[in-house]
Structures are given as C-alpha cells and as structure tokens.
Image (tube, rainbow, N blue to C red):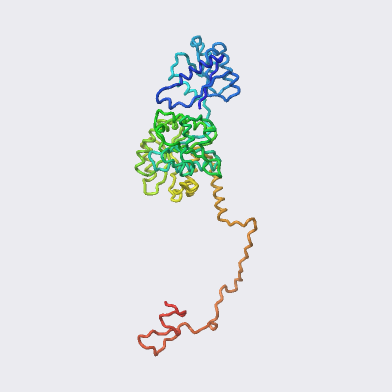
Length: 475
C-alpha cells in the first residue's frame, strides 16, 4: 500500500486538499489496475512524529506560503519520504520554485495540474523513495501447461523453508488448484481470499492471515494460499481483483521472506501487475518441441511488463521421454528471444521417476528426488538469492549426516560389543588339514567294471546303477 500524508496549517485546508488529491487519483480506464492501493491520510506535523514514515508527504499551499521553512523541517524529520508542495498563485514563479526545491521538496503541483500528470508524479516519486521490500516476490510461469511449474514452485518453497526462510506459496490456478491439492493444503478453495478480492472484508494483517494454510505441522516456515473460487470477475479486466490481490501480496511482504507465485492458468489481467512488481520471473521450458514457440511468445510478453530491476530466469525441466537436447533448446530460445546464458539456470532439473510421485505424498520434488534433483533446486534458490552458499553447503552436510544415521545401527547409548580378534595360526601350521587316505570311510569311488555284465545292461559303479548318484538321487 502506498501512503500519502497531507499536511497543511488547518484541519479545513487539509480536508480540502485530501478531496483534491482523491479526485486527481481517480484514474478512469484500464490504467487504474496498474496503480497500487493508495491511502491518503490528513494530519498535522505532530502526527508525523507518532506514525510510520509515509511514502509521500503533500504540503498544502497555505503552509507553504506562510511558513516555507516547514518544508525543510519535514525533510529533516522524514529524510526517506518524498515531498510534493501544492503551490498557489503566489508560489508559481521560478524564484519560489527554486527556493522550494532548495528546502528539500521533490516536486510541485498546482490547480492546473491534470490527473495524468499528478499520477505520473506519484508513481515516479513513490518508486524513488520506496524502500526495498521485506521479502522477494518470485513468479513461476511457462508458455504452456504440463512443464512442471507447480512442481518447481513447491520444491523451491521447501528448500527455502529448510533454510529457515518464511515462505508463502500463492496458488493462482483457479480451475484445478493443483498446488494446494498436491500439498494437501485444505481447504483447496479459499473463501477467505474471495472476501478480500471482492472487498467485502478489509485487507489487514488479520484477514490476510486467515487465508494462510500451514503446509506441514512440524514446520511453521511454509504456508500455502489456495486460490479463491472461480468466478467471472477473475477474467474481467474491469474488476478490482488485480488491485486487491496486489494489496494482499503487499501485506504478505511484511511478514514473509519469500512469496512464490504459481501462475497456473491465471488470466493476463491478474498477472500483468504481478509481473510489474516481481523481483524474479522464472519461466519453465522443456525439450518438447511444442514448447519452443510458446516459450518465445511468453518471454516477449513478460519482458515488456517487467520492471528494470526485475530478473528473468529460464529453467529447463528434464523430460521422461525422448526430447530435444538441452543445447538445442537453449540455442533456439536464445536466438528467438535474444537471451544469454546468464538468463539460464546452470543445469537442467533432471528427470527422476521417484520424485514424479510427490503430489499428495507429504513431500515435494526436492525431498523425494535424487541428489541431482535436490542439487538443481538448491542451485535455483541460490541463483534467486533465497539462500546463501554457506546454507547450501550446511544443508548438504546435514543430509549426509542423516543418511549416515540411518546406516549405523543404534545402540541406545550402550557401547558396541568388542569384536574378538581373529584366531590366526602360525605361518608354519597348515591352514587346511585333509584326512589321510586310509582314514576315508567306504570303498573307492571308482571300481573296475564287472566283466560278466551283459551287453546293454548298465554297468554298476560302487554298487549303484549308472543312472543314480551315490546318494540315491537322479543325475
């Protein structure tokens, strides 16, 4: 939420200025969806001392004309807030504007300023003075379905949660609720979020917390926000769903280290403002030839919406069946989209048959996959700045220790029994003693054939027929 504090010499002049600011902020048409939620609050200078620093301070014409030095006092009190001065007729000359700027004001507006010019000033100054957000906003999307967006979002959330980051997974798949269902985050349809998007309830820390579902009972670092029920307002570009959703995400930003958005099948009207505010946009591709054109189209649309400070990262997800080679996929997409190798995750996420069974299993792709899968997901978290290299090494060592604990049997604190030394004989003693021939029991195995055996009869060996062994069984 963007906070504008209105300051003037009297309560009446402040209320008049608030009405003027609200009228200027009332932008018509689809452009209003791109504006953040704005709160205009009137007050005196003493009120500034007992509240959080606003994003922008608007000083009225009466205070600026009578006590221009108050501009410098407000700048000293709020060095990170932008200051706009409402100038009257007596302050519209260049000499007065120069003095206002020297006292610390960032911009001015007058009675003749239109709505478009005023909103432009607000956007530029808010972007300049807005402090870095508390958490990272990461959007995971793809050019077509079935490429592993949901699997990657859940796995990335688990890796971040294991690194003691507070993570909120936002599911925007309004039709199938895949992320919420795969993680078993009930209820799969979020009616509390619907109330906030429809603005039937105020968006506050308490109401937003009611939309959060803890994924695992043993960990309070990973939460999921299932999507609201599907309605026509989701696909209506004129609805206020996008603006309300941004307000919800801004509230989450204050209490979570990372917000991971599974774009799912969300319409462009909802995704456009999210792309504009995202810190990272991750696009998933695979070796399927059908995804190459879809990926190039998605890259072109997303790059036109991203801010200057946002980063685009391409991730290749390994396929089970035969597909295009990784080198061919990257070369073609780089050629079509004019990307470089730095826009790619270093290694593809390898295919693992066992990890493909993660939905509704109590784990994710990261915990159920092979070491190569876990390494790829950790590398993605490292490249996005969610975890540090030291934490990645510590997590790898912790998993190795756990694996050793499984292989070493537990003794419940007791000492292991001593292993007796081998009974080695002297070198001059034979290691294998065979009985003497005279001590053998029974007749020799081979006996000379009897001379009176008839033709065609089987000769007898040691008293037994030739078709039998010495123990009576058949050969």
